[in-house]
Image: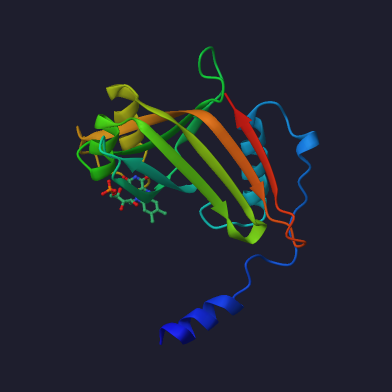
Length: 179
Ligand SMILES: Cc1cc2nc3c(=O)[nH]c(=O)nc-3n(C[C@H](O)[C@H](O)[C@H](O)COP(=O)(O)O)c2cc1C
């Protein structure tokens, strides 16, 4: 069973044959601008849930966990926030909420399979205001009128953003922004 699984996994294609071009030399100096370029491209290409990403967190004792979330917004770069503020929302009492409360470091990973593109974002997470969190709760599709005092809007301020483009010749391209 495990041997046949191994062989079935081995023959699966890693990436589609047709992949978009990416020349890091032409990339903008602002990673938010490049992310928005890639995001628009993913939307136009019909990528399902291009706003979904995995969020990795860890306890103060370094026990790690990850899960999928939805990107809510990206505030552009500002003084002290060189690579923008990448927003997501969840409940404060959830595992991720508790882990972020004791250890605010986190990593996001976006993956657009049909384009062979990945974006990795690492940084510190901050709690946004109760008003902004309530607004996010109210704006959810199909939201009811009940408030949710547990709901929290978070902003990750990246220290690193890495853009990764698969290439059919296996010379995959990485373009990294470091603060
Ligand atoms: C595509 C996708 C998007 C999701 N988006 C969110 C989200 O924006 N916020 C959220 O709290 N949970 C979201 N979830 C559920 C989380 O993945 C997770 O199951 C839940 O938040 C509990 O995680 P935790 O126990 O690690 O805190 C999403 C799940 C999927 C598959």
